[in-house]
Amino acid sequence: TLGGTLTGTITSGSSAVTISGVTYTKAETGVVLTATGSVAGNVNGKVGDSNAFTVVAGAADATASTLTPSSASIVADGSTTQVLTVTAKDANGNNLTAGGATVTITKSSGTGSISSVTDNSNGTYSATVTSPTAVGSGVFVATLGASQVKSGTGSQTQSTITYIAGTASKLVVSTIAGQTAGTAFAVTVTLTDVNGNPVNATADGTVTLTRKTGTGTLGGTLTGTITSGSSAVTISGVTYT
Image (cartoon, rainbow, N blue to C red; front, side, top):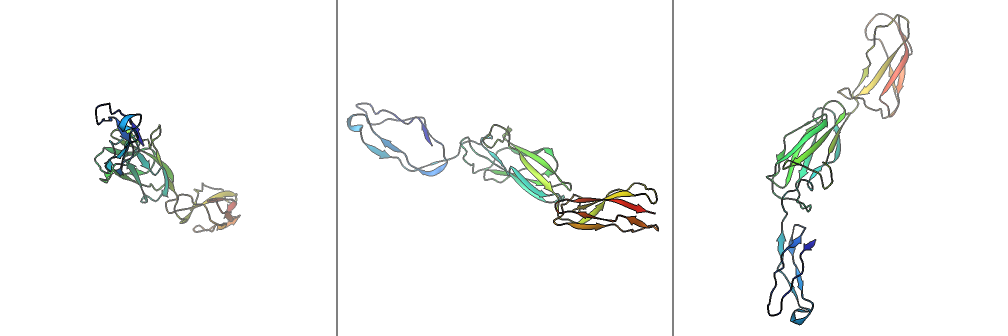
């Protein structure tokens, strides 16, 4: 956008005017300005173009700078990662192309860990979030030059990383308290990933209880169904003699 002071007067008896305070908001090459004369005299109707010139980005502005992504999901396995990036911009939203700014990316709440910030020397700065082994989420924020990165809004940008369960790996049987011989009790069985995070079944699946150790008789209700879209079943009416 061309703005600021855009008009000036070549006074009678002079041949030139300097127009101060011209602004241009986009960083780009090949910008050409056209001067058009008007009003009266031999200036009226005359036109002239400037040379093509280059406009570069201004100073880094934390309010206009961005933190991305705003949200993402990674597997809660203790090793999967997600890169967060701060892109330094000037007050008009132009990307800076050189490094050197002081940038932090930190966890403000939740779980997961984050590395130190790397200056990529091209106007971007990155840090890597590593998932924990339990499902949940972490919220991360950034600063540039000690000011909050706001992505052009009125509040500090938050990047929310959600940690989701991995692929189904095993069945976990709930802790069973001491029981009375022949009296019915309930057992809950949960489908989980390798780290014990519940995983929803993709189709109905039958779970059957059997005796692994002991010498008594396991009886009563010994099967249940983990239905599609759920992760657990409670089998009631189990007995042991």
